[in-house]
Image (cartoon, rainbow over all chains, first blue to last red; front, side, top):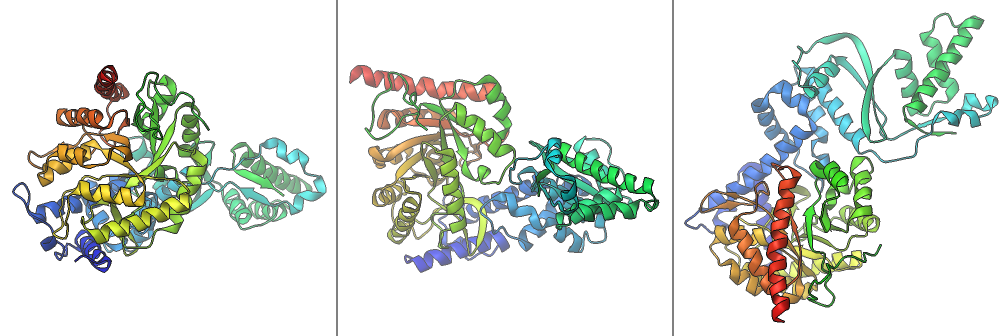
Length: 268
Length: 294
């Protein structure tokens, strides 16, 4: 086995041992008194699974806490076999876990786990999203009144929304704060959580229906006039003069909040 | 960026083209705030390149702060120079972008493979020591150096297996690769010790077997000791036999920039500084004696 082609087959066999326990590589490893060839390969196998489980535990502490360490580790081993890493950075290894939990036989009947995992992965994404200069509240003063309806809002890349149906924020927060974890409970309806990074701190906030709708629309390219329409739908008394004022105040208030919270990088 | 205080006053000149930074530490998030607050007596820091291959956030923010205060070198774990997969162009472009941002004194990675068939196993896996593999590595190191427009350092890894395909010692293999590829060596003293225990060779033979003029950096670290088998975990203090081997390395190679890696079970920063002081005492004592007898 001296040609490059054979280095390739050697590496493939080594990888198969890590992935499936396949023994082809073992006969090509020298045994010595202090450790035989199987023990030597096991050092790598243990390190492989250990490192990846540790990575998932780092990204998904609340899922781990809900499942318990033993169950979480077993589930991670299934995940590692189903989704071996294809990226040079461990940063991306856990990206399939929410979908995996939604689909895996052991967890699909507990949908709060996939939702909780989505929340935790969104925090990961907000944490290292691209830096960009954000606008402050003075940005609105540069916009002429007649231009407002057509204004398009550009959010910071760390801004994400999560729709959820379970008490995942309570679950996540109690794990973070090392408090007693409540029972998973379905909510009466869908809620939306905003996650973003302000300066270096990752933040989250539960949204009212109209704000959630407005941000979703703005993220899809709707103009400020479009956001006002969404706010209108949430304010049934909008037909009269007071109602129109209420819409304008609410819409302007949302924009002011987003600027104050460092979420906006462009108004154009 | 130029560093006018890179060389320690009175440090010996070793190889004319080899910069000497003194005594450094691996930069880890656990110590970010402590380092910025205390501004400790650390001559330089080594960063893990992949930790800063992100688009934004805390890592890059802190990196900028450290760059203002300390000389930085870059150390990668994902080049996978020994893989039979094509070199990962995405990775290389990201690496080059980071080099341009950081402007490190130098950069290094490991003489190993970390994946195959499009998969990354995130471990530093050993290679068989034979001529076809030497050629494979030389070709790829040259490609990387051409792409980056600079020499790189290749580090020896700890290993737990010897392949039946090996036809030469690790140090003969390592030396041949760096000579033919015209790259430099990051000699990990702990890894030499770990592999010596696991494979039953004399670590002094290793030190004596690598070319003096290629060594630009030393790594020191702790490991987990299972008696007659040792695992490179970077989660313990450096043990006496590794300190002894480090002393022999300084005697042989002269003033080589030295740093400590700690990657788990992080102690209070003061303990790490005490270890660094120990490296400084051992190194400077030997270098001082050499200077007196020169």
